[in-house]
Image (cartoon, rainbow, N blue to C red):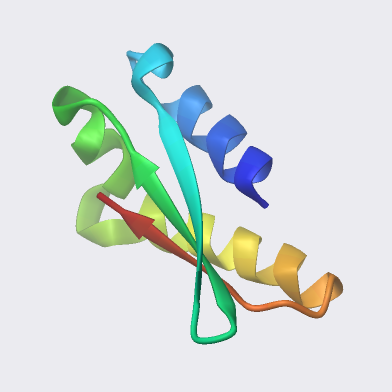
Length: 75
């Protein structure tokens, strides 16, 4: 999952070298924290959060196939 979020984020931003994904375990689920450059924050979130929502949907679908729970937080 971590690699999936990283690939999606790097394709969206102007500074792909600044993309970092940290993986943590909380309450029996995996939390992926996405860090991007300050300038790229709007590109990852999108208008009214549409891109962020789509990214979360893709990750949730992939996690469901592996019988795990994953959430994505954009920091």
